[in-house]
Amino acid sequence: MTYLLILLALLGCMALTDARWKLFLFHRPAAGAAVLILGTAFFLVWDVAAIAAGIFLHRDSALMTGIMIGEQLPLEEGFFLLFLCYQTMILFTVAQRLVEHRISRRTRRGVAADRHAGVGRQ
Image (cartoon, rainbow, N blue to C red; front, side, top):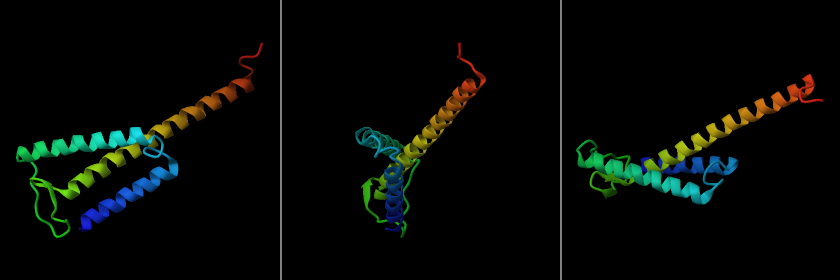
C-alpha cells in the first residue's frame, strides 16, 4: 500500500505543479487527457507483451497492495505508468516554454539593438 500512496502523492504534486503554471492538463484538458490515456495504454500493452515474453515478473512485496490488474501486473504499475507519462509531458512542456522564452528574449534584444543602431530607418 505504501508504494501506491507514494505514487498518488507524486501524481498530486505533478497536478499541483501543472495547475500552478498551466503546463499540460490545465492548459489543454481534452488534449492532455487524451495524451495521458494513450501514453499509459501504450506502456500497459508494452508491459503485457513483456510479461507474456517472460521478461517482467511480479514479486510480492509488503509495500504493495497485492491487487493485480492482470497476470503478473500489479495495480501500482498502472499508476506508475500514468505518473511516468504525466511527468514526461510536464517536463516536455517546461522545456518547450523555456526554449520559446529564450527565443523571444533574443528576438526582442535583436529588435532593440537594431533600433539603437538605426537599422530600418530611412
